[in-house]
Image 1 (cartoon, rainbow, N blue to C red):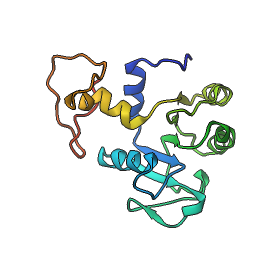
Image 2: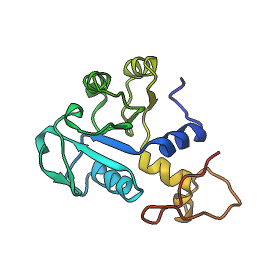
Image 3: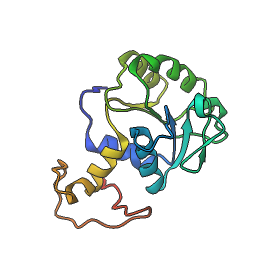
Image 4: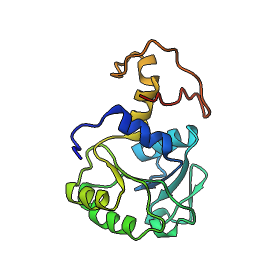
Length: 173
């Protein structure tokens, strides 16, 4: 797969199918990007599981924080990586040891590891690199456009409010 660009339908398909998200590199600091991405995803109705070994056992946004992916008691649909690109191979090993395997591994802005992506895709896991699910959700839902930003999505349809806090939901292509 070409990871330089993604079709809107690929991203929307992922965000529509995913229900649970493990955020690797979660932070309890409210000014860190991982914190507000977790808050946004929770507000949109996703089950969010923070992963940070230094914060394990404590709560972030009312959710128990886990030391590693294997500690999470529920199946995870998507692993969202808030770590540097050189940390991805070790996280990928954790992902591949998971039972069941997650459907998606999402690497945040500036995070990219093509070899890890190829290994994940070889076992049927979808991969997104160098993107933020919060930004992509808002863009595809038309929320960014409502704030005066060009979302790149053109539609004459009025947004329909869906479940979640102020959610327009994701438009399916």
